[in-house]
Length: 130
Image (cartoon, rainbow, N blue to C red; front, side, top):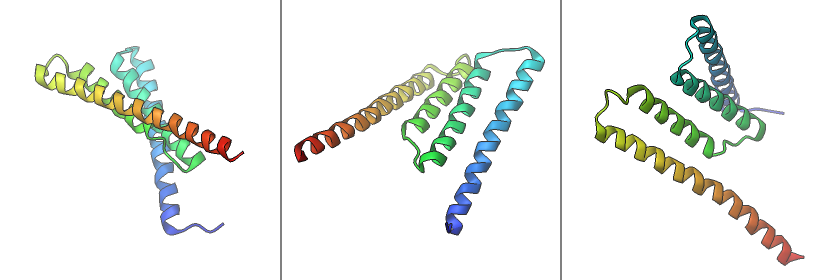
């Protein structure tokens, strides 16, 4: 199997991202265990690392990134931002961040419906052909 320079570069970058996210998650876990401080911000960042690793794994296995994964990562990152900075943030900024989460949630829901609708259309076409 021949790979182009672009495909090799893409695989190397994905490997770097996956290994980097895994190592960062491990360092975060070690730091948390050493200091014995378990805070919600740490859980959010670990969730982001897990989602990035999952996204890389999904792409490697299927050569596609489900669109909902980056949306979930963005939602998690915004939640982390709100939790970490909500005390010093102005109300209008907090409302706009919350509205962004709502908008991203709606987008993720619509994208999940798109997949279901596409499967249903495919089944309808197959049943009409038989």
